[in-house]
Amino acid sequence: MVRNRENQRIRMPGERPRNRRRPPFHDSVRPVRAMRRRRSYQRRGVNRRGCAFFVVSLLILIFAVGYFFFGDRFFSGDNLIAGDGEIIVSFLDVGQGDSIVIRSNTHAVLIDGGGRQTQSVVMNYLRDAGITRLDYVVATHPHSDHIGGLITVLGRMEVGTLLMPDVTHNTDTFRDFLMAIENNDVDVMFPVPGENIRAGIIDLLMVAPPENFYNDDDLNNHSIVLRMAHGQTSFLFTGDAEAASEQQMLLGGMNLSADVLKVGHHGSRTSTTEAFLQAVNPTYAVIQVGAGNQFGHPHSEVIDRLHIHGVTILRNDTHGTIRMITNGREIRAYD
Image (cartoon, rainbow, N blue to C red):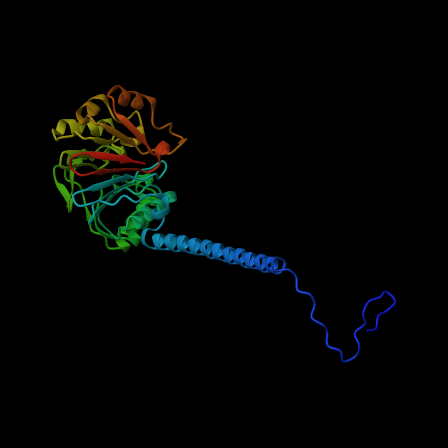
C-alpha cells in the first residue's frame, strides 16, 4: 500500500476503487425524503397555478357570454325582464330632457328621446333591453330636449307609427327630425283625445292636447299627454304640459287619476297646479331633470306641493334612470 506524506493512501494505476463505507440508513433516507417533499411542493404549486388560471378563464368566459347576450346591462344590473302580464316603465336619465321606454315581453313604446347630446343613452338602453322594434314612438312636442334623440332612433330602429302634435318649430333640430321621418318613410299620426293606441298589453289613452287648442303659441301646451292603465295600476305621462293644458284636461272630464305622475315640464312652477295634482292624486311623482340645470328645475313650489300631498318624489338627477314594473296589481320602483 502506498501512502503520500500526509499518510493518505494513493490508488495505483489500474486499481479499482474500493467500496466506500455506506452511511447509516437514516442518513441516506433523509435527502431522499427532502427531495420528495420538494417535488410535492412543486406539484402543489403547479396545481395551484393551474386552478387559478382555470378560475380566471372561467370568469372571463362568463363575462364574455353575459356581455354577448345582455350587453352593458350585464354589468350595470339593468336586468329587469318583463314576465307575462308585466309592463316595465323606464324613465331614462337623459339630463335636462325627457325619454321614457314602456315595454312588455313582446312590445315597446318610446315617449320622447331626450336631446341629441344624450342620444346614445336611449340607443344603448333599447339595445340592452333587446328591443329591435318600437310599435309607437311619441314625440310629445317639437322642443329639442324631447325630439333630439329621436332623430337617431328613427334612423336605426324599426318604428311602427310616430305620434306627434300637428305643430312646427323653426329650429335645425326640428328640421332634421322631419327629414328623418321622410328619409325612413315613417308613418305619422296626430293625437285625438279620447282615442287609444295599443301595443299588446300596453294601452295608452290620448288625453291632450285638445283638437281646438292649437291657437296656443306655447309649444309646451301642445304636449301629447298619455294615460296608461294596466289592471289596477296607472301612469300619466304629461310631456311639458303647463297650467293652460292642465286646465283643459280638467275641463275635458277624462279620468286623470294615476299612481305615477310624470311631472310636467321638468318640475317647473308653470306646471303641476294644485287642482291638477288633486285630480291625479299620485303615489309617485317622477321628475325628469338634469343636475344643476340653468332653469333651476325642479322649482321649490312644485316640490313643496308634492310633499304636502304625501307624494314620493323620484328624480333623474338624484336617482339616475328610474325603472318601475307593474303586474296590474302593484308597482315596484327601482333605480
